[in-house]
Length: 79
Image: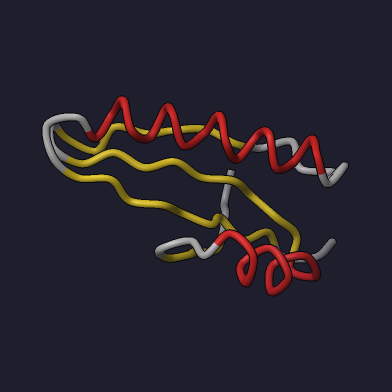
């Protein structure tokens, strides 16, 4: 099984949660339009002023998706 990478977009400020939720809509639209086999997406609220949107890709997909979507950071995904 290949490694899974969590690509992360950070949003900060008073509207961070709403911005992360809205960004997730666009991530899901991209997944659908490109017919990608990506099942793990979501948002997380880290505190009142920091939220993230994310998607999890296989190691083999990571570079191509990273170059198109330009996440702020990434980390190994561990369910």
